[in-house]
Length: 143
Image (cartoon, rainbow, N blue to C red; front, side, top):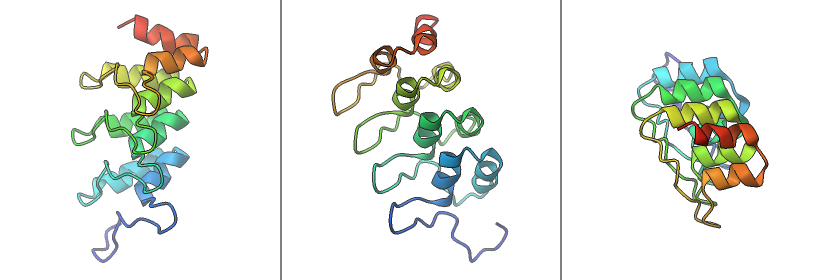
């Protein structure tokens, strides 16, 4: 990571995934931290297949440690929806039933809890209710 001739934001040609995106998918918190220490890694870069950011991918996977690391950064957009379904990180976490991730996202003051997806107009709360995720639904009530 100290080499100047390595592009840490280089995406693969098949899915458009950068090293940060792959680390977020896998829940590799320490790798995410190492990558973000470099100033030339953009935490809001999205893959080319679905347009998901590292935060969306980590939220969908329930990787609380990675979500926490990403949310600690001021330059992470927590409301950035993917380009395929129009779901935000909060929507992905709520739909997947990841209560801890939903709680972390809602605790951040700039997360919009009522942003509906562009595919069906479903809000994060509706997605949690559809999945029967009682704990997630409860985090919205506690607000």
